[in-house]
Length: 529
Image (cartoon, rainbow, N blue to C red):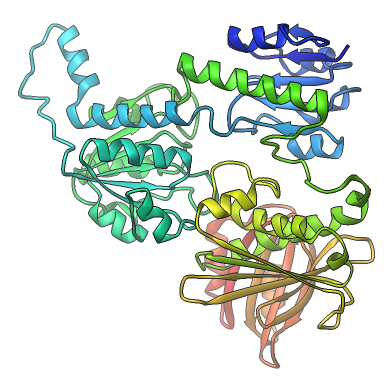
C-alpha cells in the first residue's frame, strides 16, 4: 500500500481527502525537523509539505521509495529540487492556490496605508482621540503602479479598477495588447515611478529585481508615494525605504515580507510611524490553506495512481524511451535561454528555437519548451519548466517558433540556436552544442564565436583584443578572493574578443563596476547558469 507522509500541518479538508482515498496509507507527522524527517521518509512513496519542512539532499538520501513531493503553495525554496530531480523524484506545487489571498492582502495593506488604519486603531486603544493626526487620502482616481502582471498582479489590477483607480503596469514578458485586455496600461519602469500614487510589486526576487527600489530610484518616485510589498523581501531596499520616509519623499510603506524574517528586534523601519507591517500573512487565510491542501493531495494521488503530472517544476514532458538521449539537449536549451535572458536587455516578444543535426531527430517541441522555460525563468515569480513554459508564453502574448534541420548549417554537426526578438524586431542569438562528455557548451553569442562550458556562476566579458586585458581580469578576481575554475576565449573579429570565466563565487556588484572601468573592456556581465 503506497504511503504518503505529510510532514507539515495541513488543513483537515486536505487530510480527509487523503484518508478517503482507497489503497493509500496516510502518515501524518507535522513539525518534523530535518533529522526526524530523514528518519521518517524511508519507505514513503509520496511526501506533502508546506514551507516548514526542509527537504534537503540529506533527507532525500534516506528516501528509498519516494516518487513525488507535493508542496502546498507556490515556493519550493525549502525543497532541494536538483537533488530530487537527480533521484527521479517529481516535485509539484500549487502555483495559483494562494493568488486571491495574496492579492487581497495587498489591497488590505494599500487601504491601511491610505487611511492609517493600524496607527489610528493603536492610538484609540491607547486612550487617545487623535482624529486630525490620521487624515488619510482617497484611492479613487489615483494611479496604481503594478510591477509584475502574473496571476496575483492581475487580480490586484482587477480589484483596483473596482476602486476606480487608474492602473499602470510593468512586465517584461507581457504584450501591450494582453495588458490592455486586462485593463492595464503597460508602461516603462521610469513612467511607472513617475506617475504612480501607489506602487505594489509581484515579481520573483532575482538579480534584476533585488533592490528594484533603491536610493537612485526614490527621487524618481512621485512625492508622497505609497509602497506595498507582499511578494519577496529584498525587492525594495529596506535602508533606502527608511531614508525615503525620513526625507518625506515616500509617504508610507506597507510590508508583509522582509529580507530577514522575522526582522531584527527594534528595526527602525518596522517601528517607523508611517510603516504598516504584517508577519508574512499573504497566504494566511483558511480558504487558501484549504484550497492548496486539497489541490496538492489530488495532484499527488493522481501521480501515484496513474503517473499524471500536474504543476511539476522539474518533470520533463518527453517519451520515456527518448529521455536518455534527449536529456542533455534539454539541459543545453534551458541554459541557452537562461544565458540570453541574463546577458541581453531585449524584452522578449518572439522566441525561436532551431535544432540542427541530432536534436532535430528528437522531441524538438520539448527542446523548444526547455529553451523558452530558460528565458522565462529569469522574469517570472512562479517556477517554470518545459511543461508550463508554452502556456505561460501564450498567456502573455509571446510568439514561439520551432525550426529543425537534419543537416547542420555551420561547423558543428549538431547544435541548438535560440533567437529572442523584441518589440522593434531586434534579434539576439545564442547557439550551443554538446561536448564530448555531453556537457552543455556555448559556441556562439551574437557575432562572437566561442566554445565555453555553460555551468555554474560565470562572468562574461567583451573587450578589445588587446594585451593585458585577460591578465587584468584574472588578477582582479584573484585579489578579490574569487577562484577561477576555468576561462574560455573567443572572438567576433580581429579586434573584438570575448571571455567567459566560470567562478567558485558570485562576483560582487562593486567589483563588476570596477572591471567595467578598465580600458578596452566593453561589457562585464555576471550570470548564473
